[in-house]
Image 1 (spheres, rainbow, N blue to C red):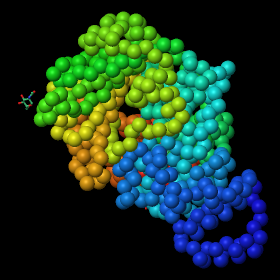
Image 2 (cartoon, protein in one colour):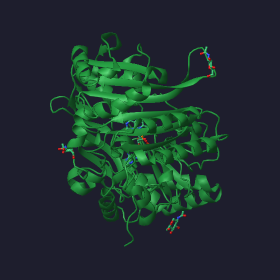
Image 3 (cartoon, rainbow, N blue to C red):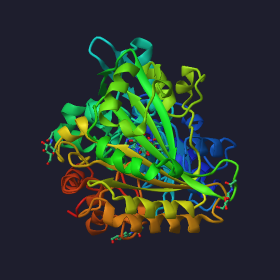
Image 4 (cartoon, rainbow, N blue to C red):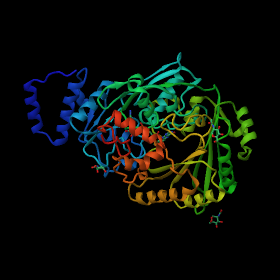
Length: 531
Ligand SMILES: Cc1cc2nc3c(=O)[nH]c(=O)nc-3n(C[C@H](O)[C@H](O)[C@H](O)COP(=O)(O)OP(=O)(O)OC[C@H]3O[C@@H](n4cnc5c(N)ncnc54)[C@H](O)[C@@H]3O)c2cc1C
Ligand SMILES: *[C@@H]1O[C@H](CO)[C@@H](O)[C@H](O)[C@H]1NC(C)=O
Ligand SMILES: *[C@@H]1O[C@H](CO)[C@@H](O)[C@H](O)[C@H]1NC(C)=O
Ligand SMILES: *[C@@H]1O[C@H](CO)[C@@H](O)[C@H](O)[C@H]1NC(C)=O
């Protein structure tokens, strides 16, 4: 509803604006506009943080996961708006359009390139941060839940567990992920081989579109509903709510972590893992975490450790039978196995110490905050041993590299490439995530980034081709032709086909229809075609 403005209040605003610096003028205009476009008035000043506010830095930093995007040299928003109701998000879209100010949307802040809170090429900009919109309503009877975009995936797991210990949801391993950005890009986790992705288990959604309208599945139509389940965040609208389908989890699950170094035959074992992990019982998810480490007692000698980190949806006895039959090379014993509940396996795989209370899931606490650069690859044929050995040589010369190999197969293979925008399905053995981490700001950043680019080049012959696929939730601005500007179709197709394969064209078509003016945009958003 739009209420009329009195001439007096216009005069007042005019006077106010004359006495203020540009950014607070923008803020004043925004607040004024919010009040005009909200169902109820609200003291919106209390929900807006400008760089002059003492708490601005805390709010900006709180969920930002990549410290590389928080350096003083990174552009900062004019202000951060933290809506308290769905209608505030609608008003924010309308008002940023009216005032012609570029907006970014943030839910959990885990974006690998920080595009939810840093705009490299377009300033000024504002951030709409959904951190206060974190409702979760679980309905056991229908085995569904409505979850709000600002909630973390850990909160979702906890609220489900509160109502039933035999229901869960198949999404990410890191518990501080925001469901707003996470599910829009796919959302994989330990149950993906049994149930698919988080995005594969969405039944309905509510989004704010480019005109500030709230649309549910019926109103948005099947094309747009398809696009938001895997097409990546920040392109089609602002997701307010997801309706998710809960999945059955057994009362007892089994976890294990077994580490093998080069001296213990890591190379042959990893080679074997590639042949086994994507085809093994779909209740079993064995990922491999690969890092250099020092040989105990010898500072000068480094080795590579491969850590087999697993969750099995079932009891240890059954797991041991599966392993004996399919992967005896790992030598798993009963002593390696720990039986636990599904909710505790969530903490285990997120690497919390074993005595951590479950309530840590409600704190949205990030377990990972670093300067980092990452990349991803999908593997379709086992990498030969000599290829793996070349990889070791490269890892051994970098300060703090990390690889995570994540098996596919099972349910993931049952979807066709176009069922959702996420195309990495049947035929994918596993995904590799490459990371390099550092702590000393931008001093040696260029060196680390150069290292990971060279590593990525080295891997070319061993991974998917035409296109070389990548996971949109592991956003990598290197994939663009011009990393800072992907507003044209040609530029965007450089990364578009890698993330989405042929689904990219359908995403562009949908974008052109629902957001022709490109209100929702960032360095790697889906571009609309010129009309
Ligand atoms: C430590 C760590 C662990 C991870 N583990 C996993 C994992 O186990 N599985 C997995 O699949 N991925 C994982 N990821 C990747 C993660 O899924 C993506 O980074 C995801 O985009 C994060 O969502 P977010 O809301 O936290 O991030 P944000 O930075 O808030 O958002 C990411 C993108 O989505 C957009 N966006 C945010 N909110 C909304 C909204 N409400 N509506 C529309 N667009 C929105 C943003 O503008 C941005 O483009 C991990 C990332 C990190 C840093
Ligand atoms: C430590 O590493 C060096 C260099 O590789 C090697 O020569 C030496 O034997 C190692 N010492 C021990 C105690 O392993
Ligand atoms: C996956 O692909 C393989 C090999 O092309 C094929 O044999 C199999 O039937 C496919 N699986 C599904 C579920 O479509
Ligand atoms: C991005 O590229 C497009 C087309 O190539 C151009 O029109 C636009 O001005 C560029 N934007 C920026 C911010 O550089």
